[in-house]
Structure formats: C-alpha cells, structure tokens
Image (cartoon, rainbow, N blue to C red; front, side, top):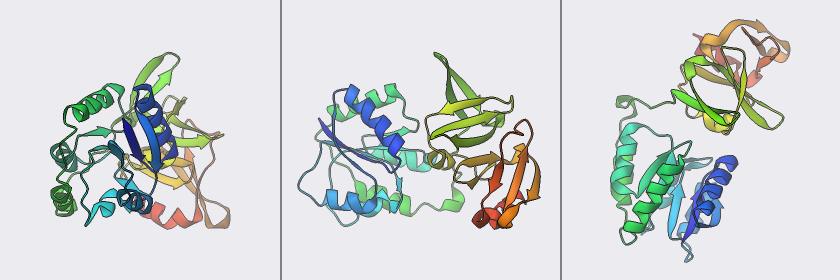
Length: 251
C-alpha cells in the first residue's frame, strides 16, 4: 500500500513514516506545504492513502482541495477542536490526535482496508469547517503530556510543567519538581497544542507557563529576562520582537 504524508514538522513526519513502514506500508513521499500538496493532487501519480496534518507553514490543507475532484482517502493527523474532529470522523477514514498512538493508527489502517472503494465528501467537510464560528467553539488544548523515564512512561499534567525548552538539538520539559524530561515533539509543534492563556513562546527555544514566572526584568537590546523559581540556571530571554505581545499576555 502506497501512502503520502502531509506534515510540515520534520520530526513528526519521520516518526509517522517509521510507524507506517513497520506496518508494511510504503511511504512514497512527504509533503510539507499547501503549494506542494496542490501540485501532488493535480498529478496523475496518486497514492492509496494520504495522511494529512491540517495546518501547514503556508496555510491549511483544505486550500489545496478547493475546486478539484479528489477522492483519495485521507487520515487526518492533528490536534484540533472537537467540532472539527466530529466532522473528520464523518467525512474521512479517521483522525488521529498527536502524538499518534500506535493502536489508533492500526485502527485507522484497518478502517481504510475495509472501505477502499469509499470516497470523501470533502466539499461538505470544507463547507462545514468554513462555517464554524470560532467565537462559539471552545478550543481543545493539551492537558497532559507523556515522558519516558527509563523503560517506563510517566504522564504529567500541564499544571506540573514550568516551561518547555530546546538544548543541543533536543527538546525538554521542566517540572515544578525541578526536573527535566526529554520530549519527542518540537517547540514549534507543542506550542500549537498549549492553551495560549497559560503558556507563551518567548523565543525560538522556550515556552513558559505564566504561573512559573517569579520576576521579569529589563535586559539588553530592549529585551526582557524572565526569572523562574527552581530554574535559576536557565536564562529565559524574551526576544525583542515578542516583548510587546509578552507584556500584553502578562496582563
């Protein structure tokens, strides 16, 4: 079975590709932008199944599906609000919330195999999403995150996380207990899944919780320095271009 992954996060794309290949599926390509996806959809070389993230760097995937006759089955891989999720369940093979669970991936593939001849009502799906009133929908944000501790998996609530950060090309979270744990997701991808009222990405490498901040002081080049209890060895600097929004976020 040939599949194409549509995902702009390189780490997430590689992880999904490994999972699919272990199940005997052949990943014939990875697409990271709406522009690339539009070219692929208009080509004569189509896979048996697509795996779509919703939000890409240059837009949302539905932009590539406008005004085209497209009936290739899709599994959505995303962290989206509940209203949209219900729509996906009615109009696609399945949806998978990130981080993707192996058993749920198996179930999605099984659904596809049982309905290979079915087509998607993408026009209805796109119309439904475009008519959603954002102000009336309550977004669904991450409340927990799993980390590996040795050969065990530990589930942490976000109330116990002070910040997320990157260091030496790896990504970590830092807890109220003063401990760091590596995570699989990038700072970019995790930032999309957090409640923006509780967490703010102050620069490329740090996302901090508002409850973690003990002090904010002026720093060089019109930047700000954030002090966090239990993390005195971390210099958390608010980049200059984010200072204004950061102050508004603090209230």
